[in-house]
Length: 411
Image (cartoon, rainbow, N blue to C red; front, side, top):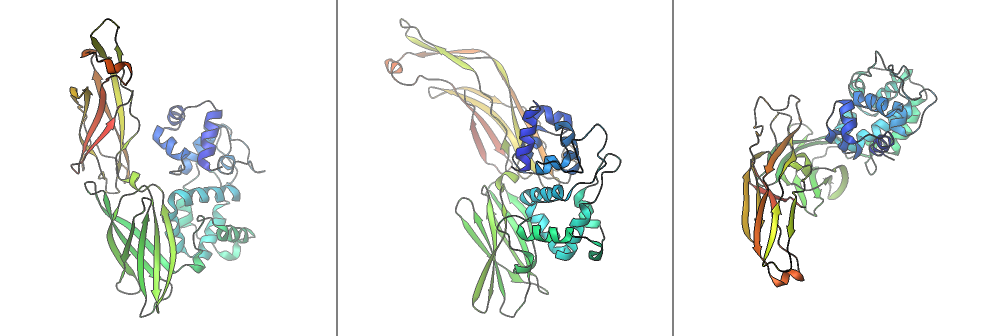
């Protein structure tokens, strides 16, 4: 069972909806949904609050089991350290949702230093009701390997067993000493991302060559040949089409021999850049016909509706893809009976109302109201056997790339 599964199970056992739990933690409902789907990992402050609200300890939340040193959290701050098992579970979750960043960090540290930091982090205690960010501590703790106990050997075994994720090459066997991937630009109109890649092979020879290959979930494959720059670093840049996910491989060509290594998998590629419609509300309508009538009556019921749209922002505070115009249409028997503009204040790039964080998600709420209306259609005998006409409601969104997306508002 993953951390997301445990959060969902404990929440339901506590009789809480995602909205109710989000309100207690001071986060969005979408954040709860992403945690439960293992799409993102809660911060340590959020983990602390989650454990408190769900009535379990940090270790129980991370691993599903209580340790001897910890029991269910009480009203006050925990006073016992996060166990080795809890650290391992946290790292496993982090590896799934943020494997690329973690691997680059460990590569910079080197295996011995990384093991030292991990073991020291296992003994850090909660202080004054808060546990300082584990990630920052992993980057700043200065320790000596000579002072570590048997935890080093245990962590070495766990690291070899795949803390960084199944299918990943161990550091000692990796073709690369370091590597990095950055997003330079996103084109919403062409639905592609400009990627910049760099890597340093462990061993450099005169005939050494590198090639990066993106294998997309829709079956496409894109290879980028790297060019050696100053020193031992190879660089490549190219546009990558959006897909639900992709796997990045590197090929090292030397003396006519090619070796291939999988670097990482990005499980939610397209959702990081495109607008996401959270939910489409049902638009109520009804219809009636009596046997002696020559007409068929379709009624549009009055109602207020709201459609949440998530827009992801880049690290520079600019959104990747955002709506600039939205409207709702209704069609009955081939005739347009509704064309309603949605008067929504969209947050534009560089706006003072943009997100304050370096990166984040802004939710636009598309709201509209419908008046009660009645439409009379001539009755046709074929309606007895087949489907009868109804109003087909559609949501239209024009984005910053000039592309129009259409979504059905189903009954």
